[in-house]
Amino acid sequence: MCGIVGYIGEGNAKKYLLQGLEKLEYRGYDSAGISVLQDDKIVTVKKKGPLKNLKNAIKNVDLTSDVGIGHTRWATHGIPSDKNSHPHLSEDKKISVVHNGIIENYAVLKEDLIKKGYKFVSETDTEVIAHLISHLYSGSLLDAVISATKQLKGSYSIGVISQDEPDKIIAVRKDSPLIVGLKDDGNFIASDIPAILSETKDIYILNDNEFALLKKDKVTLYDERKNEIERKIYKAEFDDVTIQKDGYDHFMIKEIFEQPKAIKDTLLSCIMGEKVEMDSIKYDNLKDINKIFIVGCGSAYHAGLVGKIVIEKWAKIPVNVDIASEFIYRNPLIDKNTLLILISQSGETADTISALKLGKKTGCKTLAITNAMGSTISREADFVFYTRAGIEISVASTKAYITQLIALYAFALLLAQKKMEKDEFENIKAEILLLDKKVSKILLDDKNIKTIAKKIANEKDIFYIGRGVSYASAMEGALKLKEISYIHSEAYAGGELKHGPIALIENGTVVIAINTDKNLKEKMDNNIKEVASRGAYVIGIVPESFKNSNYNDTIKIPDTKPELYPVLSSVPLQLLSYYVATEKGYDVDKPRNLAKSVTVE
Ligand code: AGP
Image (cartoon, rainbow, N blue to C red):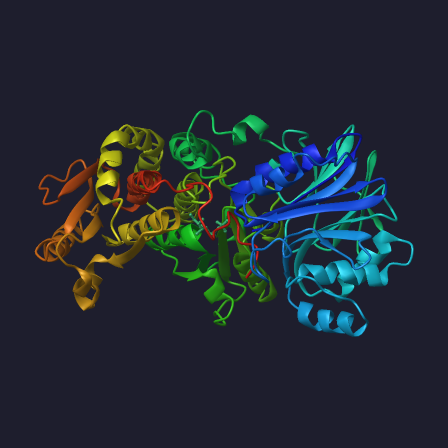
């Protein structure tokens, strides 16, 4: 996903822009650029490739300025190249624009602007915005931006500067996050809080179709009819140190080791007390619910698969789980007695936001489980529960995923607490409250897992198998491995191998078996024998109490209730993926082609 920063104040805009872009690198990008206003002229430098290419290009260039905008691009329209990088300029070079999102009607607008005589230099949708604002400009940059956005369809967060109005930045958001940072000697715009956290914690969070006019000593917000808007200042909870690596080699390993605390903090917020309490979720608002949909993408979807099993088992309510991009186009059967649960770490994933909008349109109740306060999903859902994982920087989700599981366990108990036997309820709760300590114990096995990782780092294909909740863990494990080590890895339900996939097993094929449920152990043992007898190298993730071990390598995890194993089995799978990727020398936190939050459908 693209990253936007902007600064206007009494300082060196170049410094703040580069600093902000560095803090947004974790989101994934393929080019970067800045525009600054110098002696009332716009100076723009933009480069394909990592931020250091831009830094090298400007290190000897005097870009002293009080106002500027910057951007890291994750290519959607047009290949990664210098000319497709942002910022994009109007033809007269008087207006510069940065944009995150997708302009769905850019082709029609581009054709019309070309007919009007405008010349385009890039293949991007964003360049249309620069020419359109220029075309509509008649003395007020704010008016021109408001008019231009009326013609735009799609998602956008936009930052604009103009040499004719050098004392301001105009910003606007629709379906793509944008915040304003407030400081006594200047003001900022950014796609995400980390970009400006070192400078200020005082934030305005823009809502859809809201505009910000930033001057060095004043910020004014407007709606699309140019009415001024009052907005409460949101105080960012994190500090800049939180998002540093604290001595770890990568954010991912830091966040893996933060999981005991993330679990504990999330538990404290929902089931440490007598009853289950979950932020704005109240049981009385949900007692008429007779069907639940859980929707998310990637790891959030895998958490939903676990949520289905525990909600159906403990609360006896039927649950469907959908990948968001499938859900929005399959006409799901939802009505006012349906609860739609949206799971999203970032709270900004476009597919999941679209699912939320579909749910609201059909009148069902919507509940968001997210790690991002103030995110779109958290603000648009009827109810929200915040996982307390703390800011997650690495593209590969770990602590956010684990706390989504905790949230789903707590929610299932909340729904069940009036139906379930008290003893059973207390027994489950007690087991959940031990999970953070059990994860700490698994983390002590770090060296053994690293040794196993080195053995499989050069494999071309790796298979994961599991049953029940451990099938979801197998999917999550396969995703972790493929997204940071680029090894082709697939998850299969243990019972499904004989229906085709076992044809792929040959001598030396690596199979990772997540075999945790004593009720399914015999079946899984058979599946493991099936692959082992064809020469597979089997790595077992098994509870300490499981005795017989017909694995080539074994990773033991503490015992717990069958439904709770995904919290425990995911940790070795995360570490395994991390050590394979570092063994291969890859950029673990910023894997190729990926973004931390995918804000385009
Ligand atoms: C997980 O490791 C991946 N980075 C990805 O699948 C992610 O879970 C997915 O894009 C959903 O993101 P969200 O939770 O922010 O909506």
